[in-house]
Length: 342
Image (cartoon, rainbow, N blue to C red; front, side, top):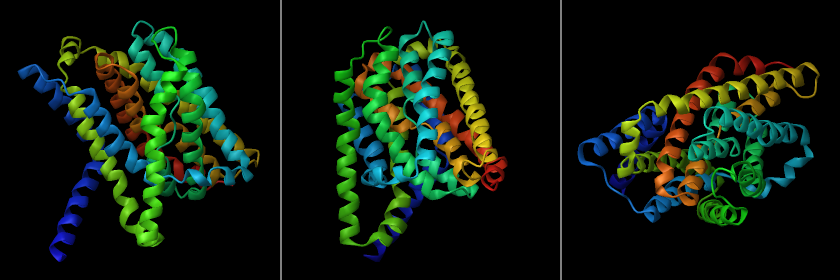
């Protein structure tokens, strides 16, 4: 039994290393996958296998951590909620729509992926950088599930088809079906799993032993998924058109720059007008800049064909790399200072 505990500990240590260096490992996974395509023409992983990986390894662990049942109880503190939702579901998709039409208007699948990430805000990064900056953790912990719930039941089934319906075939009904498969089912199972673990052990065990490792499991699933998607035979098109990376990078970088500019200005205004203290206002920045790339990948792989999804996943990977690096710089240099203002 002791040997098993040591082995399990080493296993989760390895997974947490993957989580820590996920951005670098994602680049390596892309290069390895494309290298396999270049030297051996790659292979075609069945779509059902990819969806299984994304639901079980990527989304399900995330959902174990989220307490959706507590969402409505936090509307008693409405200012951070509506400030966050306003940025994420009014300004964010409008910015993506504008940049997408300018830079990606002739590439329908990339345009769709770009709009998609603009409608799926927040992630574990929102909470992690909130803690790092000394901001109000309780604010982050209820803004994350609220934003994800609005994304699942309003953003994806209604706003997304409205924005991309003229360039790709996406209906509200098909989006609802995919949300049920990759969002609602894992959310329900995740809630039951969390309660079962707490009942079997206790809340302290879940918080200290289980919760810290769930993000690492999800990160490992993302890495496996990226490698398999990049190994698809049709990615020979990416090798023949390497400039596609720059085509994607320009609007993605401009999108994140615009979100930073808007949310930082908004947070400073809220602090200056005494609407809310810095420890709450800065959380709006983290819950707006951080996009839930995991859920975005799940929607891409379930709602679109493999012929379209590989280039869409490439956009999500580039977005993740920009997101991680920019949040690290912001949280270290500017976040603590803003959070300390009153």
